[in-house]
Image (tube, rainbow over all chains, first blue to last red):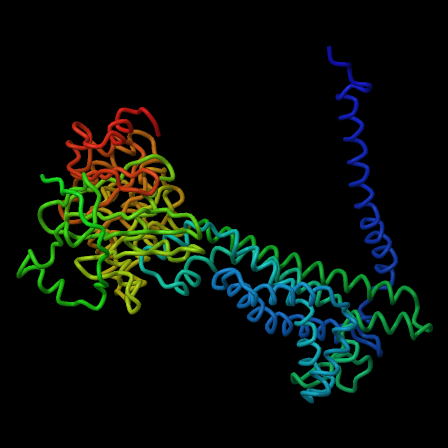
Length: 282
Length: 300
């Protein structure tokens, strides 16, 4: 005779269901609370003047952030995707590959302010780019590179081996196989990495602190890669820490615009990814 | 039909740089076709009459420390269907993949001995792998159409090897699909995804895809094992038609399939080629007790 359970498994099951769903709710609530609070506070401060007038005008900062994000993606995407293709399709298991992976993991673990300092030393001073859009984007690219590489590698791994075999067996070279079969099928997953890195780049302050961002500019819109930029997160940072005279609603409104911009970028990229996925399936 | 007697265990010299072999083939058959004194071979290994398309000589194959093939020698006749049977893990698929070098990418893969296509070593250093695989096509166990349209699947191979124009491609696609007995079923939906086809249609699509690069040899690795009996029947019918133009080597778990479609059968056991001969002989009067046991379902 086996002894009976102290508590019936069905009751344990019910209890665990309640505990687990509560935990999930605990995660969601602060996010919703934050968004709601920011909307209430921020919407009050939103008005057309906020975007165009004064030294805290949002429009130049939005444009600056957009430029920064696009240039970051333009620098990081080719390098990151190429590295992922090498690691997943070409490299054999060996010391070199292990070193590269170790470097990527470590790069991902470096605090963003250190990236900023490194960018200052390398791009601004050593390469003499100066404080500018290019230096900022290059620094930001270093920050998001590990994200892009690991997401792309994962996406490449998801492409079934039998498709590669089918292509190679028809006499395709490795590159032809990558170009015509592997990459097109990995594209949606690679896009996910890009989306993540873009929204990360839009929100980060530290990497551009010393490399690209200015608050007050005589010419608010950059005209070349070597102009300084305004950026939303930096503007919010300076506004909050050094400008007590700016009303609280303006700060919340700025935060609100930043979040909407990042969410907008994310949603846009997700829609694009869904479109790619659907196009692939006909 | 003649079973060759056991031979002395002499290893062959490298044949890679030897262009005279294939040249001499038509002139003096004797010079090319090795006798048992030249090739070490086990008893009960038949050397088929007629033109030999593919040949393995004293193959030893390793994955790391595991030996997948043990001293396998086999000559595969042109425009015939040769079946390779044996229990799982006996090395028959590994052997098949030697002929288009699909094992090369596997970590720890090592090969001793020679693999010849029309007398030329296909493991020589300066070999153009793409050209080899264009001549020696392969159909896999599970249908593996690319996630593209039916048309683009068939056009994939020709586009790899050149830049055919629109009308050439149209012609290749139609011809290949007809050869694979699929044209009537798909001619109205060439632009639709190949993934929408049934399993049996997908496998015939994969066969058509290989035929589109105009190979000489078709390697088929259990091409019907994932299919239902009707689809299997279609594939077997198709193979018998294709035999007219192609040398076909098929690996199969299904002994009935081997006896239905092939003219020659080889039985593998634990990396060893136990017996090779005419299909009726293998199934009706096997010479080796192990073949007999396997055919009668006593193991495997």
